[in-house]
Length: 175
Image (cartoon, rainbow, N blue to C red):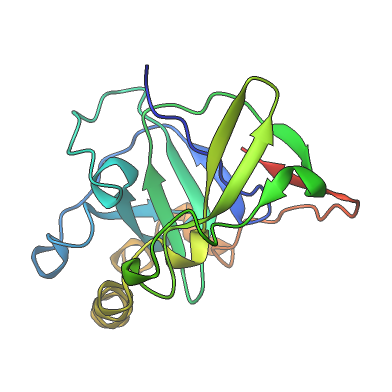
């Protein structure tokens, strides 16, 4: 079957339908390009490529998960969003002894979520990119003029941030 991953709910800002992704030549090895999210230029990466599964065609209903990472918001292209579930904290385990240390200090996976009938790899949204990729992306994003606001996009009247509610409790929420 298909590989299924979990993503903590806290960094998820919004799930978007596929929109036009504008390629940026300097980013072609790191990101698919950028999209306009409420007037803000937002880089987009493909999860399949990040985890070594190869590219898949982008279809009309391919979702983009907008997440908040260290430093910037990021669009994450996935094959589908299956469900939102609550996982008790005691059902989450780390990767010590599971993934070799040679893979780096900040692997894309932060742990495993044990749910009935399966174990899901839990993605670490702060380490979606390798450090060099994140630096390149941040540098290019700083240099890009905010064309969407420049041309008077009505969506740009806000601050470009998407509000989210915070929940307290003893459960880690994953999507």
